[in-house]
Image 1 (cartoon, rainbow, N blue to C red):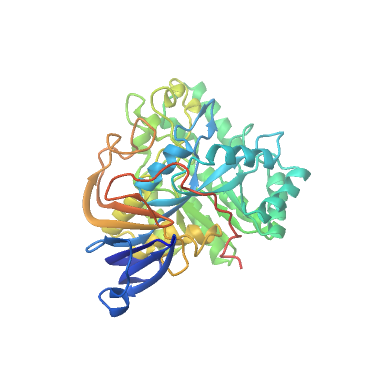
Image 2: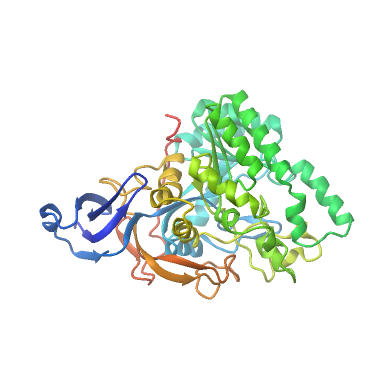
Length: 467
């Protein structure tokens, strides 16, 4: 039984085009586009017609950086794959790339299998995995080749968190050399964790225990230094590099310099760095703990440089690094010692709306919105044009977006499994109305109609900017 849906009368926006077009969906894929009102479009028949008059028709968002159920600091991220992917759908995101974790002393395969078990049959939208490499050795390096072959084509390493995820420069170089051979992409958490630990110890000894000091010890210069070092190691290895959650203007400058030299170096930032700042970390009564994440929030003056980087393409992707911990019982673990506050913010539901707000405020264009939120992450991680665009043959991951609807972000109305909103009270213009995942309506005019298990695992090809 073939099933057909027609979306009529909307403004279709992709990374490259804006056109008033009708969209024909057949068996979960985009079958055709035709200018609205033309005989070709009028001739289409379908079981379901969606009226998108006055609305945008955009590709479903691709969030290439989430952490559902991540173990961290003696607790777990509060969103499961079920709750987290449902919230993503509410926010117009139809694909996530989450991180499977290798524990020290264990194989990559064990970590990947554990994450498959967490996610399988639970997801409301499609998902894929990156692999966190915590233990570089000869067996791990061989496993990297096998994972690339089966569609896990990106590997995350940490210059931060000594004793947990940390890799030293030698381990990083070996993994980069391997990825240069097998086509994988190394993703780097670029902060000098060894130096940061010294500053943490000194701050706590001075009695500086509150959340604001989390931002003060994780200095922008130590993000810039690690970014510079990661770039140089990648250059020695002849490997591409993707730097995650860039927050500091000094780190953007390192990326810009490398790209000006023609190096295959890429950068991602997140909504929290574009819209929040150290002012939030300094909120009284331990409220600042809600905003503890790493890399940390920066003083407001960094925001302009991040927006500039997104406009000049020195930063290519906006992902969320969605890693929520409840204020009660989780963030509170760090009362009296900021170093024990679980690091992470909720955001998977807010990203598309916040970036549309950036369009409204003139930071970026509509097409750039789709580029940094949908198309580029899909290309960066080997899923384009199946994901990230509206074109014949693409998966029918489509969002009907009302650009004029107004909303106030709040814990009262969001769907993430966390007891606060990082954007409480923020007024934004634009809202997701209807969401299709592979042609199935999962949000229908602001009502959830999806279900756990609809989302399928998506193997990926290698980074499409390197071919």
